[in-house]
Length: 401
Ligand code: F0G
Image (cartoon, rainbow, N blue to C red; front, side, top):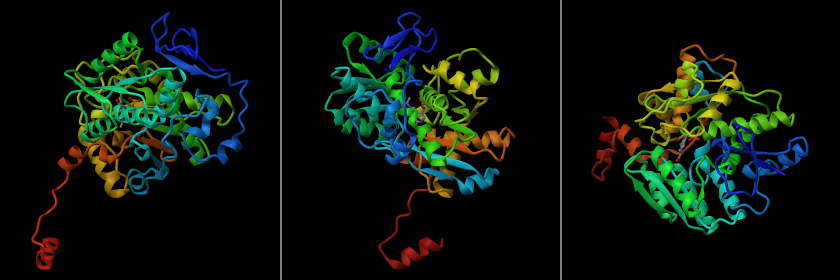
């Protein structure tokens, strides 16, 4: 049976205890499986559809999950951008193709399923947007109420629309994401709602399947895995999952875990660049990529370990670099993503220009959310449509100008 283990002091807790942080030292908990005892038939995995639930032997849910058919996202080769950068083996895993349009659905199918198994009757999160959209959708699927806290004025329109339409109680706080997370954590502990931010160890279990799928799609382990980093849950989750595949002997090495942050909110990238033992929070995080506008990432300790243990790295990109890559992905590759998602590929452009990438590397960039999440940022970058009279002559002259 799996159990919860503190990532810092290794204290253990039963998996059916509702607990988010170690009661001994206050650090985060992770799900641990007795990997030497579980027997997994890999050919069985390969007979199941590519999805989060292909890997159910390495997930904590025992009964029928609350699902909207998440995962199974496409892995595209970036031929033109790869050619521009001199990187022939560059791929993007398009997590925007999940049910709510972001990778958060992988976590929520597991997290909301666990909420029901643990007997919880309501769920909550703080969010820069995508987590709230996903939680609202999966809570609706499960038939339980959801409360979401957002930083007022800093959440992309599509994400707010989703959270509202799927029936969550949406509350905007006059403060940033980091403060919203503190508040919702306190609310959950005092009022018994189930907390589904990435401090929740079960949610991250679902997200680790991004790595599993990429290994299956490439029929082998990539050399480098690149993720945009906000609260640093996703990079930690993918690393954890790949470590499990290594322990099971399904892969023979780990990819270099590589994190990308926006220049205005880059505590993890700074800690890596300066060799710090822990991150120094950014008190006023700012970036056009509002999804990763986070100054005090709660999973930073695990992310630093993931990057350092695998010989990976972290880098920053400017807002201009992020938006330029969002356009390149859209126009050169036909891949529509939101700004935070373009950060992973923008980070590879930056690193390859610095000579930090070997051209033979097989690189998987996770593009985390769909273009339609943030229509306002898109419209702001593009020429508006030309309005003409409904006459062929006007059409021809518009096209020739
Ligand atoms: N990309 C997108 C589109 C995101 O929404 C997020 C996080 C990340 C990357 C970073 O992932 O936090 O695991 O390092 N969004 C969270 C939210 C914070 O509330 O939707 P991370």
